[in-house]
Structure formats: C-alpha cells, structure tokens
Image (tube, rainbow over all chains, first blue to last red; front, side, top):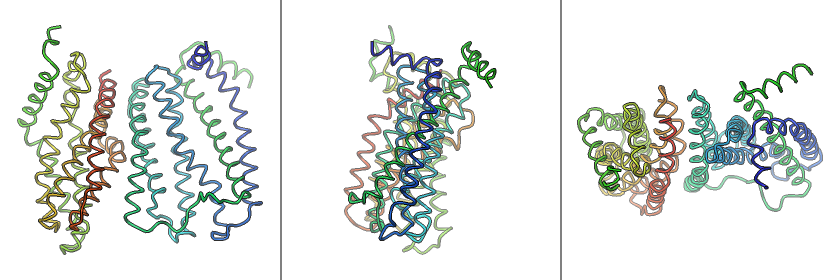
Length: 250
Length: 229
C-alpha cells in the first residue's frame, strides 16, 4: 500500500508533474535561505580573530564541499535503485546528479584555493581535503565521460550505474588513503575549520547557507531531471501533451 | 544440462588454460606492457639527473607510476576480443557463476602482466638506485599492488569493452580508483628503500587486494553483462 505511493514516482508523467510542482518551492527556499545566510555571514558575523575577513569564504566553500560528496551518494543510490528495480526515472535522476555534483566540486575546489592564498600563502596545497576533492572531481568526470561514450541511453544508464556504485564504495577508501598519505608527508595544516567551538553568530549563517545550498541542489536536480525525463520520453504521448500545453500557455 | 556435469573448478581451469595459451601464443602483445614499464622508469633519470642518491628519492614514484600506467596499457585488450567473437557471451550463458569465470580471466591477466612486472621490477629498481636489501619489500608491495590494480582495472575494462574508442576514458575511470594502491604501494617501497619496517602499508595493500578480490568480481560481472547487451 505504501509501495504504491512510492511506485508512482517510477512513472515518468507522474514524476514530471510532481517535479514541476516542487521546483519553485525549493528554488524560492534556496534563494531566501542563501540571502539570509549571506547577510548573516558576510555582514553580521564578526571577523575571525585569526583569519580576519578571509574566513567568510567558508560560507560558500563548506556548503559546496559538503554537497559535492552527498550529491555523489544521491547519484549512486538512485543509480542503484535504477539498476536493481529497472526504474527509468531513477536513472534520469542519477544522470542529472553528475553535472551538478561536478559543479559543486569545482566550486569547492576553487573557493578552497582562493581561501588558501591568504591563509597558506599558496593557491594549491596538497591538503588531504583538497586532494580528495580533486579526486572526487575526476570520479565525476569519469562518470560523465562513460555516459557520453555510450550512445544507447539504456546501456549508458546501467554501465554508469555500476561505475557510480564502484565509486561510492571507493570514495571513503580514497579519502582515508589520502589523509594517511598526507599525514606522513607534512605537518598538519595551519588551521582547520569545523572547530566544535564555533561562535553562534558564525555557525548560524553557515547552517542557513548549508540549508540554502541543499534546497538549491534539489531545485537544480528537479529541473535537470525534468529535462532528462522529457528527453527520454520524447516519443511518448504524454510528453507531446505536456510540451504542447506549455507552448500554448506561453 | 550436459555442461552442468562439469564442475565450476573444471570450467575455470579450462578457461585459464585457454587464456594462458592464447597469451603465450601472442607473446609479443603480452610483453609490450613490460617494455613500456622499463621505458617509463628509464625516462625518470633522463628527465631528472643521473645522481643515484637523488634517484633513490623518486624511485618509489617512478616504479609505481610506471606500474600503474603499464597495467592500464594492458587492460584494453582484456575483454575486447572475447567480447567481439562471442566468447564472453557463451561464458555468460554457460550457467557457471559468471563472476567466478571473469575472476579466472582476471587472474590470467595478472599472471601475464602483473607477475612479469614484479619479476623485472628489481631491474628497474636497481637502475633507480634502490639497495639490494630493499628488494624483498619492493617485490612484496608490487605483488600485492598489481593484484589490486588488475582487479580494479578489470572493472574499468569491462565497462568500456564495447566502446570503439576508449583509450583515455579507461584511464579516467581507473586511475582515480587506483589512487589508494598507488599511495600505499609507493609508501611501502619508500620505506623498503629507507630500510625501515614496512608492515603498515603492506597490510593495507593486502587489504585492498582482498577487498578487490571479494567485491570486484560482482561489479565486473554486472559491467560485462551490460556490455554484452
């Protein structure tokens, strides 16, 4: 009974309708939460006593870094669902995750490097977190490359699903091997975020930004998944109905 | 049903014998990655400078990057021909555990590319200034590392076997996944050259090899089945 509700999401028209309904909610939530977080983080929060104003980049960096990893997990889980239960919509969601996750990873890397310039005195430090973020970017690129290389959508779905699952098993191994490698090579980095004793005035904006970016991720995912579902179902009758109706309305 | 009377062990043994015979008949192809490995490790002294004390510092990097790249070079052929002539299809339909048969194929692949690399590695290591006492450590780390590399690489080869142009894609898929092997292997080699105990990274390499042998066959079977569709 509960399963019927879940199974309906496997139906492309139903998924498309629900996704269309939900997109503006998540989009506006993302805009409001990020605006609040940015005001809190860039204006209201006091400068850090060690890092000065430079620490404020973490309000963009940390949500991106966090989402870069969880996007990969979302991608692998929906790929797994698609592979095991042969649900096309789940594959469409997985396919939509890749580019979003790669962008989060790239932004996290870029902001990490910008932060490193004043803090470490160099754009690139072989810091374990930055290094594993870079390897995560390669994993995303490999996933997208495999998907691009296979012409048949169904086979691209299943092959890239296997790759995503292999990747998600490997991500913790890669992460800890990089930490282990780094701790042998150099002294711990100058300073770290994520101290448990973060001041409330700094922490609240960060949580707002995190919530805002998560909402942004969902909104982007829904938009991309809608496009992906439409592309896959381009010959179906409901697609013609939906697209025709939107064109008339516009 | 007639095939079922033959046990899985017999089937795997037959497959191993066939693959070994094929690889030995084409010894030129089989030896290519070895030549590549030697050439790559020779490039490092040429690009740096021939002073042995400095070469010793980069010897682990040269050996492991060389091993990684030469294992990649050999991967492309692992399933391609058997996929094209229908051998893999027959194996998938045979009723024996497909993951087990593919593990047997991967084992032959390791025997023909990984093991020879381990055997000639002392040559390259000596040329890079590694002391004689370091050889057991280098051999042990390469032995475990090449097993893990073959298993990881086989999954990548299975995913890309039906694609016409896959050279750089295979590298992009496999190399990030092989990073832990590179880290632990190079570390074990560096410790061996420095004459320090290298148990830690060796155990971790062994753990990677065991984990690969346990999980990779399932991913490999799924990947090859998809490639056969």
